[in-house]
Length: 492
Image: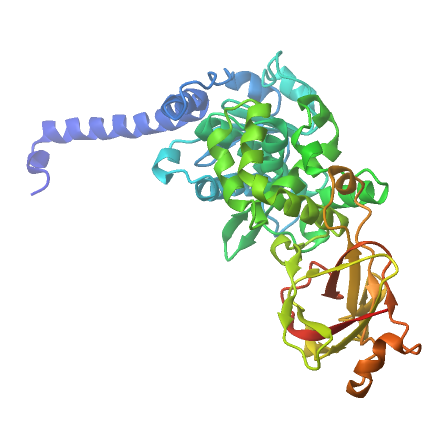
């Protein structure tokens, strides 16, 4: 029997009294729990302090002042949210505040993966997020310390981060993850590194999307509409068009005070995106997380030493990157690669395979201004997929255009053998020369080419190396396939 004493009246009375007291104690505890949430949070924060004992103490929060200021307090597993945003919802919509909590909680395992953090170490990780519409309300609540610097959008320090609600929902979420990334790096790496790396990482990691209910950080954003309010790519495009592009050296030496201007967040993001995706820098870039405690000069010099063997190629590919930057840009496919040489018959020509899956491809052929080349091409490539493949020959197809030329058209360019920092900073772009099918040279006339006036050829505009590519946006190379076979004859 479970209760052998139940038959005794005295025992029954004692048990009934105990039951009433237990119910009362639960009711009182639940009520007290709401009132003493900061004390409960403090216990969790003490456990969290073990992650990094060097971090400052949490902000002392008075729940009565918070409530009196009309600020809502909501909690998730890894975040306590203080906000004056109201849940005035259209029927069928979810509370945006709850979505922010769910976003932050979902980001914790993603941050663990991004920064190679043990999930067990992050179990007690929790921040307070102060997300504001009316800043004065939070001053009245004591949620903005007197020594907190002024900030235009967001600021992270210790156990808390502060930010303003943005007009676009995506950008509000981006800022939550941006400040959350700063906090994560401080807690688990001990620092965020020099300004370009700190802000660039926060911008890059905070780009996000959902994939089958899993949150993806450092996501590739394919369309502007998928990141409303962010706008970093458009800002870079405008600066490049105005001749104000930044070299890699420029970006890596941005001073802390410069980040009062949004453009420097854009360029720092671009550098992190570029370094993380380029095969010649990706491995060294990942290792930068281990050196975030170094001063900016030492940090940069260490990275420069690691990428020194590839610096010319990286500077050149950075120029290509910023000149054609758009949503969905794929650094791996758009960096300069080598056209594949192929054997040719008859003699006198040099021939190459030019792939449709990559952007510019170098032939390695050095030319001088005024040299004339006869270029011919054969074969077919696929330059898109809709209801059926878009098949193109070297002349291109007019179903779509890129840079004013038909999609799939063979293009050429002559580029200096090396690019100085000044060349990269100016980023004049790569001047494209439409080639198309060229003018095939009959085999019977090969021995007469150099003396035949009828073959004027293509005049080279400058000294340099000949590059070729299939005309296509750098953002749309993933569904391409095939290659053209291109023959090049030098004419006198």
